[in-house]
Image 1 (cartoon, helix red, strand yellow):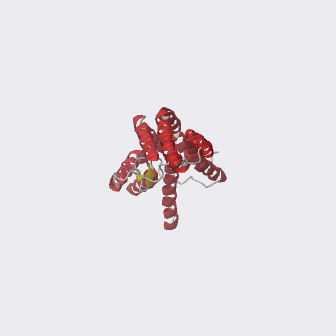
Image 2 (spheres, rainbow, N blue to C red; image 1 turned 60 degrees about the vertical axis):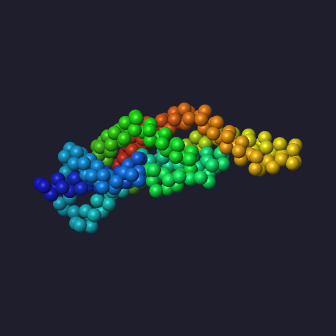
Length: 256
């Protein structure tokens, strides 16, 4: 009996570990790996007693290892679905920085070991504040617990619907980024157009050098004016994260 309970706990622990490995905010550099492992163990301890015991007695060692790898992969896919918006913010910040002329100075991303431009970092912090203030980290953990009702242990399957959904989510990263960066792209186009006309009218002016300061200033003004709009845009996608996690679990279970 103890062996079955331990096996159930281990399988839940592996799915939780995969989720927290890419879970938003839990991948921060100052979030210790030991604490992430401890949180995965605690989640498994809370969830495992309420789950039916998997039938593992007749499985050979290779099949058991495959089942463990399967649960880890499920957790990674669920975490990937919850992190899609943050990937979009990274791309959006890069586009905004490029249009504002701020793509050279970069700082360390506190949520991953990558370099981010200043606008991308601001968007990250804005999303993190909204994420925590709305208790979405709790709702995502609730969605993880509910995923076992949709996708029991050992019931996952890789079908075309899942691959199409993941491909669609990846494409939406660039769609969301383009929508968020659209005002800055428009302002940059107007500034470029104005200075192109000035370059024709005043040939002595160094249009290329002068346009940098104007583009940066105009970008900062637009950024300040559109902060509320950007926050609403981020909030719209943040509220969908628990549903996205459950949708991936549903597709893994073979329910389109």
